[in-house]
Image 1: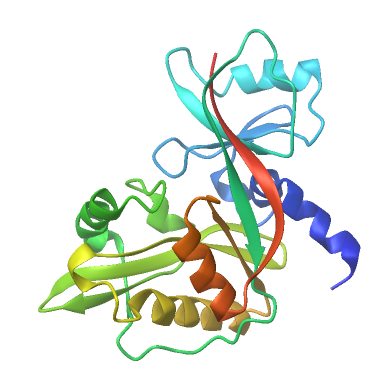
Image 2: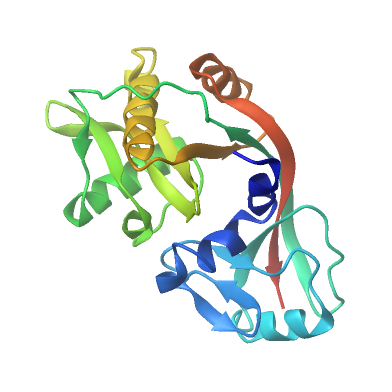
Length: 227
């Protein structure tokens, strides 16, 4: 992959909503966002203009918030940052995908169980319609969903793996690793590469991803904004 192909990863939400996920995009000028029940993300050009921020205001009603993924932008006075944190972007170009026989496809009827597992484990945002963004896989024990993971952002050449989590009572059995391998296998069958984002304090997850073959590319900032 040519080095220039990596630049879209600096602004992955904008690349997704102006590319393969355009069908989800709510649009105002150059500002884009996912529906609030699909994903919390707002996207602006990498160097947003005053007009871009005015356009963004049309997509974020008063009293609501949205998350902007960026490499460092100045926030106008009309916006308030509710929360801000860094994430490590990791690439899985050379990870070996391995299908997992115990992994099952998850669909809309599974969402209540998925939301409960997310509530128990807090892997990051997973909302009522997040499952529409890509393929989600899970592992069941005694008919109960105990591990899951899936695809979130989808941009040209890349699919983001997200919401990887295991119930506290079932950890230590390699379920997350096996689900990751199965997700990567599916992504590679589409001739794409995997990308993921993890907070730098989640050292155990970073170690797992590195063991699987993911490498750190750069840090990005997520700012949760309200007007």
